[in-house]
Image (cartoon, rainbow, N blue to C red; front, side, top):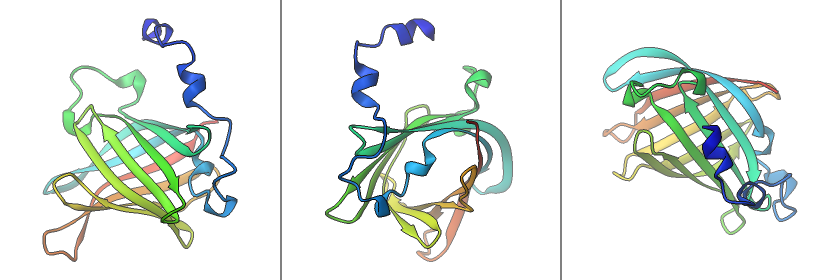
Length: 182
């Protein structure tokens, strides 16, 4: 891994990373800036029709990017120190979310990519009371809803759901309980 980091093009990190939010994003619309930093996560992942949770550990890292116009993250499950080539593909996550403020819709455009599992989604994110709700769809058209709830400076609860074919029932697919590491 260290050799890979040393092979990054000069300036890539400094061109991507930003010190903070761009002045173009109103403070009142800074929905995701509080996430910047590292988090450890306890994961409950539900497999298809099996509703018994698989308890896993992971990590997530957030930062301002693109001159402070976006918040990007890296979700890793299992943790870097526990990853092996034998990781169950259903529970393999080494992906990134890019959340970009769009003043034309007064919301955040979100793209999630997990190449470890071939999972891609696009959503729109907004505050909803004390929570953050992201809604969108998978490439196959399945509606999704992801929510940050129980938000504090040092913790949050994240849930991921998909809409069942009845068009009314949301199915819980995963939960993440996060604690800030620094």
